[in-house]
Each structure stands twice: as structure tokens, then as C-alpha cells.
Length: 360
Image (cartoon, rainbow, N blue to C red):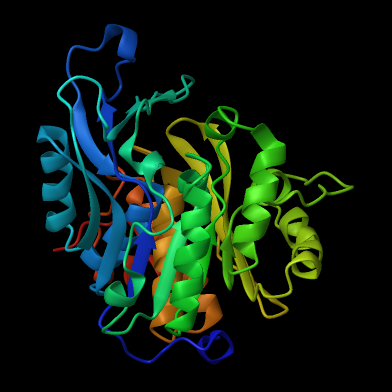
């Protein structure tokens, strides 16, 4: 698969992500209306992939993003350094009153029959102010770059962020990199300035530059405007609906060489059945189904994406790349926060059928 994608063999940076950094306030099991304290997690759908690839998989990664010079920005920048990700910041000065700001995500974990609740404060968000021309791509890619990644959350922030993604992708292509995009459709974000119609219009132009797509059937329908299946899936773990839509995706976007997604059946907030599938150059691959005891589900999809990309970047077989993504995503749901605390040995053990027996 590496040959089909023409992944560069070497480069100073294995992956560069483009997206917005956020801080997530997490009261744990307590809903916000009764919360008295919170943990702070640093996140961002695009950043999470770069952070996971650096911290767990030991690749050299970077993030092109907005940074505001105030204490919340300093907190976020410290976590970026801790995850080993090289930052390329467009800096903004905070006016001391109303921004620009680093966005806040509020997300409790739910429990049992009570689902997690997620909402945002993205008022005057610095990431949404990013636009073409804000980054010197030739300088960022000067030492060589193997992979470029962005996603639908960043594309949804404003009318300029999608244009910046296209600019970054084109520059990455010129530098020889493979380009991936996680559709990550978020109706709440798109509804602020255009809804599903605008989403499909913007994402269609982005995907014209993409080699590897990540997203489920809902993402394909709402993010890409691909018609839905005529026959309903037997269960959330049935990949037939997803695979049935691939022909339509590739017909519309013949440049796309791979599409992958997770499959999740939610029995309760803390009990999920978990699998993953991929289509690569006309062939399909499926991971096993694992029964997960979930601590914090946020970030599991990004965990899959990073493990899957790691497999492709390191020359693993397509089947093993899917398994590595599936395993890392599963492990990520056992940690608090949005980014990895797993080791590569743990990921490989799970991918090979490891268990939760104590390691002595």
C-alpha cells in the first residue's frame, strides 16, 4: 500500500497536521450543571493525530495552528511540547477582554444509561481567523514531509479555514507528501454558517486534493454529499453499508486511494463493541470486534486514525495498519483525555489479540 500511495521514504517530519487547538473541560462523571471541579485536556481533532503519532508511535510530527498569547495559550502550548509535537504558530494577541480566544470544549463522560454531553464556546476563536497566507509552507516543509493531515472540524470553523486547508494540501502535494482528511462532520459547527449544503460544497473542494479519507457513512453522506445506502445495515458493526458507498466516493473523487473508519455499537456509555474497516485500492480489510469497557470515549476515532496512518507510514500491510488503528483507538478509550497514554508495545500486543491480564 505504501507504494500505491507513494509515501516518501524519509523526511524531517513524518506528518504535519493543520487544525485548531482547544482545551477541553472535563468534570468526569458529574454533569456540568452539578460540577465543582474539572480536568483540563488539550485537544483538537487534527492535533490529536500528530500528538498520538509522536507520543505513542515515536514519529516526528508538527502542527500548524493558531496560538493566542495569554495564560490559556501558554497552558495549551506546554501540552503541545509535552507530546513532542513541533509547533508552527500563527500568533494572536489577546485584548484582555474578549479575545481572540483558544476555544473551550465542555464534555462530561456520562455513565451507564447517561450519555456524554458535549458543547462548545468558540466565540472569537483564533483558529477560525486563520486564512490562506498565514503559514510559510515552503519553510515548514523545507526539510521534507511525508504526510499532511487535516479534518472537517477545522474546515467547519469559518469561511477561511477550508481555503487554508486547500492551500496547505496543495503545498504538501508539491513537497511530495501523501494527504489525508478526516471528515469528522459536526452539524453544530456547520450550522453556524451554512449547514449541510455548505459543508458538502467546502469538503468536496478539499477532497479533490486527498489521497486517504477517514470517516463513517454519516460523514460520507453529510460531509461529502454522497447518497446514503438503499438497504439499512444489520447493525452498527456491519461494514456492508460503508463498503457499499465506496464506489460512489471513488467515482466522485477518483484521486482517493483509501477510505477507513471505525465501527462502534454503543450498548451503554461504558460498554461498546468496537471494530474498524478500510478500503484500499479496491480491496477491503476488517479488524476483529472487541468488547470495550470505556472510561472516556472522546478521541477514540483520532486514536484509530493515528494508528492506521502509522501502519501505512511504516510499511505495514494494509490489514495490519487497520489492526494497529483499531488497537490504539480501543486503548485510548481507557484513558482520560483526548490524546494517547499508550505505548507502542501495548498497541502491538492488543493488535495481536492481547488481553487485560496483568503484565508482570
